[in-house]
Length: 133
Image (tube, rainbow, N blue to C red; front, top):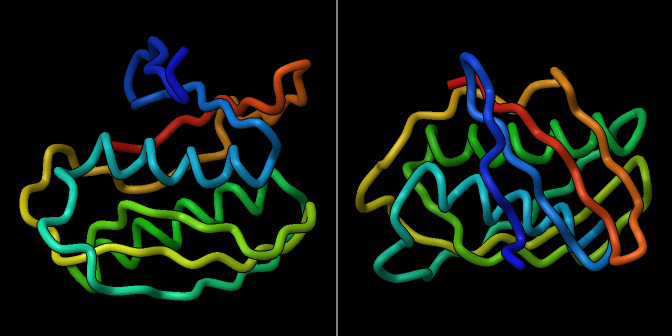
């Protein structure tokens, strides 16, 4: 079973992401985002540390993905590796590793709250995420 799959959505882009736990879910959501947007970086040589706080884990997930989209657009970077080094339901610290964007596949403007849900399952956690394209 794949760590993410596309879900039918009328106007935007929706995915279902899975992880062995919630921090792994956040890393896999980021990995899915970049697989949808770009080709992998030719040389992953840049590491950035990201620290975020939010009001709950759903908002934290949206903030996390939108921060990555922002960095991708502003810095021209594509990230391929995501290490969540500290996690609570309202805060995270992560290292992201990537390099210069070589080829863009799809423009994703933002992660949204539309239909957003994080569910704990017997196999870990999953989230339904809709992106504005």
